[in-house]
Length: 167
Ligand code: C5P
Ligand code: MG
Image (cartoon, rainbow, N blue to C red; front, side, top):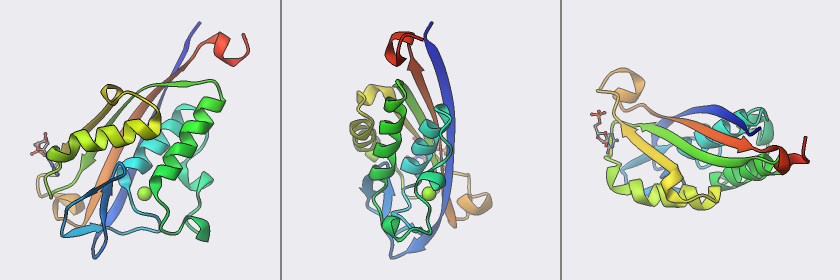
């Protein structure tokens, strides 16, 4: 019988001047960006954690500790690609990803297609299986006050008995 699993991912980073705003591997034109040891791509980090969670493989910090100089300034595509490889090694295929970025500004909706396509390429999926949604925090709390941004993601993966040795 096909085994279906889901995993949840979440991330937040502070907003900072003189940093790029990178979401799902796409650089968004913006007066400010997100602070972090890596490129601070909250969306890629949330999707990475969702995939690791679905496969029961821990979290992003376990695989890429932010104390390790190898990951300083690292492009988060690499984290995501690594999580995809780990999930596939265990015989899973990715069914779909859904996600939400919560950011007061800039408006992101014009970048939805580019973000979906970029994430889909790293995930090895059709863009139709990758959903990206955007919300403001209605000017409330740290996100609403423009101090930080958040991303949430959920991943569904599946594995049929034939795909992992006929068990
Ligand atoms: O947060 P709110 O419900 O007001 O968002 C309305 C719409 O604005 C969202 O559905 C989304 O399409 C868009 N949005 C956006 N960029 C953001 C926040 C929201 O494009 N940073
Ligand atoms: Mg992060």
